[in-house]
Image (cartoon, rainbow, N blue to C red):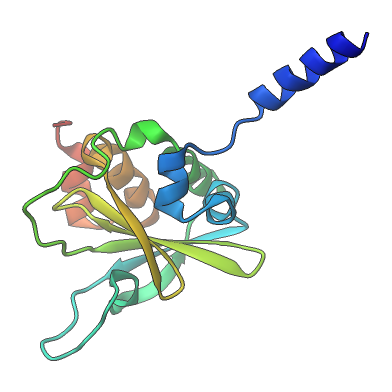
Length: 170
């Protein structure tokens, strides 16, 4: 009987898998992963590059255009599922010859803590932050259309997102 209980416990623990090492690295650990996976609130921001002479160290501190947009719960859940799924990043950290110019950011909030994810659609790279701390980055080339489509649900009149959401997958 003890052996059967032990096997059952091992099987149950095996079924409750946490994030992969890569996903954990992208978000900076299981606590940050949990914020993105199960947020209480998600806000979206349009970003603009800093003005000449403006010194800003991190993309999540770039100036915001307009007010933050509250992401509807169903859209937030789809962002969470996609961004915490390893298949979203098949090229992970492959080097790219580009100069990122991010235009959008999501802020995932839970328990008065937040994780920012900044998106450069030109380079198909996203960057993760916890407050002013830069965590990591990942390439999302094959997911550009899907991610742009979700942002389009938040910013429905954005022409750049409309083009990205309509383009063929690379």
